[in-house]
Amino acid sequence: MALIPAPGTVLVADELIVPGGSPIRCPAAGVVEGELRRRGVPTVRGPLGHQGDPGFDSLAVTLSGSKGPAGLGVAAARGDLTGWPAARDALGACLAVARPRIVLLAAPRSFCAGVERAIEIVAEVLRRRGGPIYVRKQIVHNAHVVADLAARGAVFVEELAEVPDGATVVFSAHGVSPAVREEAARRGLDVIDATCPLVTKVHAEARRFAGRGDTVLLIGHEGHEEVEGTYGEAPRETIVVADAAEAARVSVPDPARVSYLTQTTLAVDEAQEVVDVLRDRFPKLRGPGTDDICYATTNRQQAVAAIARESDVVLVVGSANSSNSMRMVELARRHDTPSHLIDDAADIRPEWLARAGVVGLSAGASAPPYLVDAVVAALDGLGGVTADEREVTHETIRFTLPAALRVRGQ
Image (cartoon, rainbow, N blue to C red; front, side):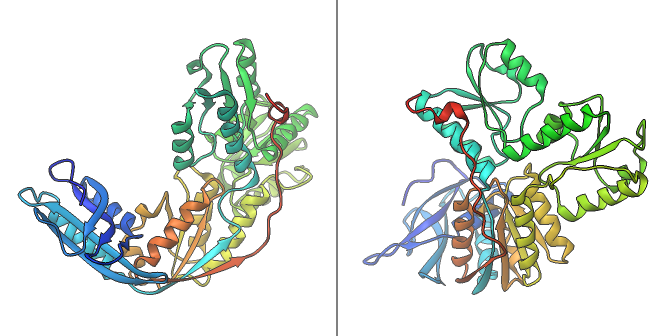
């Protein structure tokens, strides 16, 4: 077994070594590790002898998974058992909820076309030019994606002031205001725009609506990068409206000249509620020719609604700053199903699974598919799963790269 590197650290087994036999995988190790971290215990991952190791106190058990034996194990160095009670309790908490389960996989889930394009843009620029390249804000709202690109040479900054003059900078999928573009041009930055084309559509609508003399009511969450970018297209003519309560209070110069736009990642039903309130107050309210809420957001919400009705609990893979992921959690809860946002399998709390024979699982549009696979594997390591995919629609949309990256050999 690998040595535990520091006093008080607990080893969480990622495989159990069986003398004379094949190693037993431990796909639920992340769940055990998450329990320990929430209890403030430092951890390390590595193999663990199934029969124990000299010099260590250890517990290891074997369960049944759909692909064969699966294990759970923890170990702490004898003589320094600071974390051992927590390790034993964390393992016990996972064992207490071990059972066969059905996993309902919502489809579509995970990456949308705009997210795939944005990530590909950063990866392609790194491939062609090497690092560092700079990215204003997170390219998409997912901690794993950002960490992966940072490891390859992307430098994520909050504002252009952090970017050296003349450097390459990528604008995130959420878009930027004209003021940001002007600053980049003034400083001679080499800009590559990864704004989602559907966000670009909303920006064009904001300019058009303001240009014809309307007050633009932008339905969205103040402070979100997409809203900041859209607002910046016509700041004097735009008012951000967060919810139905604000829609009931908002004041405009001319009630006969009002238009609305929406953030692309809102909950469809809640956005419609806000529009209904605005239309009651401003009968001449005008909106976009087609919905601003993007197809991927709508599809993922519909897929979550379909599985929530049959699930005991719904897990949505996504980061806390992902608006579309949060809306999926809220939607499942509106169907009276407990629902939780998780960055990865380590965020799963065993108590969520105590009475859950059917787990609904989806992922926000910025969450990598491999994270969903890892959650399925973790649940499988807690007694086995039968996976059942429920597809409400099939997505075929793809967005091309910016022209600068379509030029061969650049």
